[in-house]
Length: 244
Image 1 (cartoon, rainbow, N blue to C red):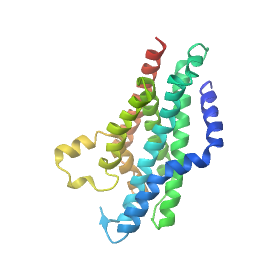
Image 2 (cartoon, rainbow, N blue to C red; image 1 turned 30 degrees about the horizontal axis):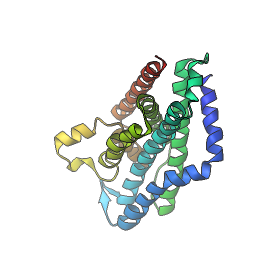
Image 3 (tube, rainbow, N blue to C red; image 1 turned 60 degrees about the vertical axis):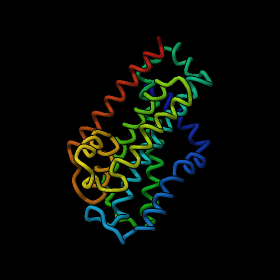
């Protein structure tokens, strides 16, 4: 239960800054909803769905990714490189993997809270979504994947500027390429194959299928689980690297 220390610390910080966190996390998703959802709305159909119903799960997936990644990566990066509070972990008897788990859970929580706000906004905009238990479980799995990736990124970089490169070359391109705003069926096969290797693609597809009342694709679920395990292992390796 050592991981709870880090999770609880982040909860206390989030409680103090909740309004600022939500406002910054929801600005871009709400702009996407307003620009694409209201602009195109139900006049356009995508994969047999009104575009708004197609769009909202994609924006939820983007929000889960960005809020989970940034929520943990920025805080951990600052504590490791600037405030130096991370150094206290290194000399404590806390198991290293508890550090990874605690920060990943904190990122998950931030991503889930932000995504819940987008779901609520989508419903207010008129999207028709079936929000069963499977939808929320996949959403939590998605936040775990990208929170774990955020831990790995924060432990690998040597400056705040280097962390921005992850956003520029990984997070930002995935936001627009992974079937969040448009169907992947019209893409060239070689490009579609590359995009299907990215985790946000499967997060977006699963959330859209479940919100539309369809069953979750088992392959996509396994791929997300695989990414969660991979990023957790990479985070542990990166933490050991910091300890040396």
